[in-house]
Length: 75
Image (cartoon, rainbow, N blue to C red):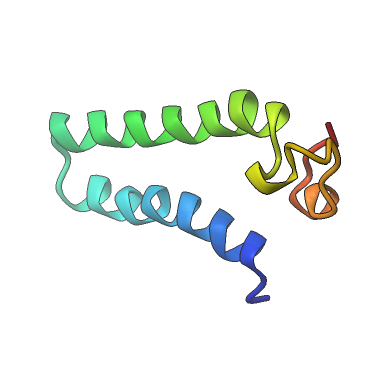
């Protein structure tokens, strides 16, 4: 449960989950725009960055041993 991949994904998703109750309690355009930006950045990371390169340290090897655990295809 505390492996680096799970902690990394939790750090990506936690701000989005934290903003949802704030939007319900106190709706504002600034909060809504920050929510949209966070979701956009998360989707950009999943669909643009992750498919290109799973790990920076594996770029030279052209194979990542942790890519399967992250749900990303190997290079």
